[in-house]
Length: 289
Ligand SMILES: [Zn+2]
Image 1 (cartoon, rainbow, N blue to C red):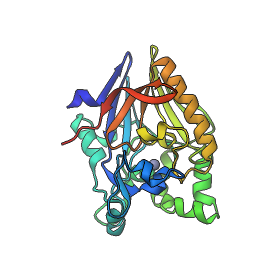
Image 2 (image 1 turned 180 degrees about the horizontal axis):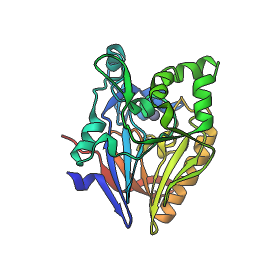
Image 3 (image 1 turned 135 degrees about the horizontal axis):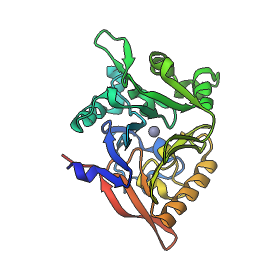
Image 4 (image 1 turned 180 degrees about the vertical axis):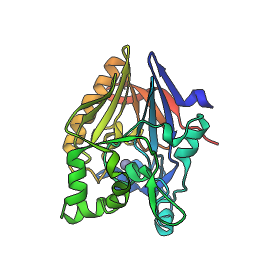
C-alpha cells in the first residue's frame, strides 16, 4: 500500500497523505460547466454533492518535512461535518502510519486560506479550544492572502474566510508571510499563481530533473485539466485557465508529476496530450479500502 502513494526523486521523497474524503456541491466545483457534463465523471448524490479528496503532499528532503496544505482537520461543527460529510483525523493518522508525528513537520505551505486547505493547521481540543496541529512547523502563506483573509469587508470574501481567525490565531507566532515566489527548501518552491484567490500559491518540488507540481485549487480534480472546467469559487477564472494551461504544458514537456488537491480517485499523474486534450498517463491512485 505504502509504495502506491509515494514518489521517489533523487533527493526527495513525496508521500501523498489525505485528510479524508468529503463532499461538496458539484455546481460549485465546476462553475459554468453544465451538470449533464460533469456528472458523468463525478456522480452527484441527492443533495447534488460529489465525492472529493483532501490531498496533502508531504515532501521529505534531508531534515525538511514539508506538508502542502492541511485539509479540513477536526474544527468543523457537527452541522458543518454533516453538510460536507467529513470525518476527522485522517491526515494525522496517515502521518503516524509513516512512523512520523505532527511535531516532525518542519514547514507547512498553505496554497491559500480556504477552510478545506488550512482547517487542519489547528486541532480542536476536547475543551473546545484550539492548539497548533504541527507544533514545530513554520507556516508559509502569501502575505496578500493573509491580509485579504483577515481584513476584507467584501461580503463574499468575508464568508469565504470566516474561519480564518480560528485557524490563524493559535499559530500566529509560527506564520511566515511570503512576498511572492519563495524557495522553501533546496529544490522546493512556493510560486504565486493567483486565479483561485488573488494570492493563491502552488508548490513545485524538483530533484535532478524530476519534479512534482501541486497545483492546489488551479486543477483540483483530473476533470479540471480541461480549460473551461473551473470552480465557481475562482476569483479570476481567466487567470486560472492561463496558469493551468502553462503548467500542464510544462508538465507534458518535462514529464513532471501533477497532484490534484481534491480528486477522489487520483492523487497524482503524469500527463500527456492526446489530440489537443490533456489526459492522464502514469497515475498514482488514491487507495480504496
Ligand atoms: Zn479547495
